[in-house]
Length: 128
Image (cartoon, rainbow, N blue to C red):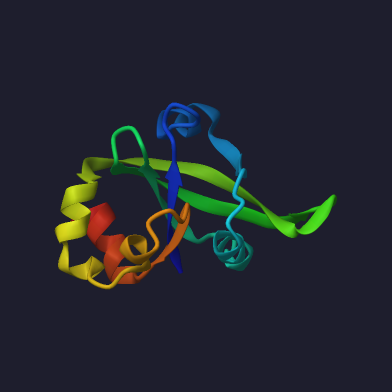
């Protein structure tokens, strides 16, 4: 499975992830997004999307581990390893117009910060 992870670049940008090399992906509160995070597996690929500022897919990351918060077992702790910057950022308008995203949860529930991607969607964002 692949995922699109939204991040506000003024709080934590893809450049921050590249600088840090690895990070804990947290701060998620939406129950549906938490379920998606709990279902992640080490080795799965993600696309980092800058929300609010920039509004574009900008780079990749890989899931390193998924554990639970000892204080609250319902809260997953996902560690991500930086991948590569996309050769070309994919702006929101372009993603919206792409046929592979017709009917996607990305546009049905736009406020979700974690969205599963099909292989076709992931390939379009990363290689298209």
